[in-house]
Length: 237
Image (cartoon, rainbow, N blue to C red; front, side, top):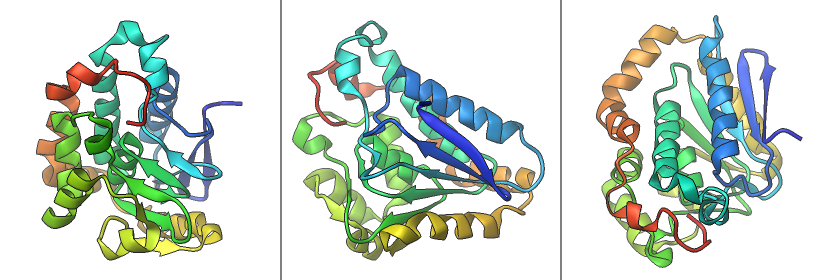
């Protein structure tokens, strides 16, 4: 089974992550980049919805892989994850994260990199747990979170590591909708389809204008204090 599946639903590309907890390792990052290549190479009306399966959207970096088979990559891999987040942030089509389950750490950042977010209301958490796992955020990650959340929510999510359910996430402005499990993907598809006809060049230019400084930091892949933990013991990040 492929790590990701990319299909069309009318004008909307549906990118389904199919690797269990959908943690980021070299294979999954390559697969996600290939999917974005396909979306970017398409023509005509288009939008993108990203979703996971079962109880996970994404649980972040695959630190077991990073400490094992990926140990030779060091901090370079974390830089590549940031560059992937940057691609999602400024993708020249509308994007919606259908958060079907847990979105932790870099998985939460993947959700934030989308233009809009729809989350399951009854189960699953959005969480940035770096304070508890002692994993400093790289500058690009901090910039991405800051550009999406209000100042107080930005402070609280990072400095408390709180697990935030769908209804609470919607109340805090982290997500745009919190709905029943069977409505997450349909609601995300509806949001995406309504925007798929927007002019790509204009959409891309507006995104770059809004998030250009954040994209530049992500694309630079600078790790800062996170470099010391890039090959740490396996945990969620």
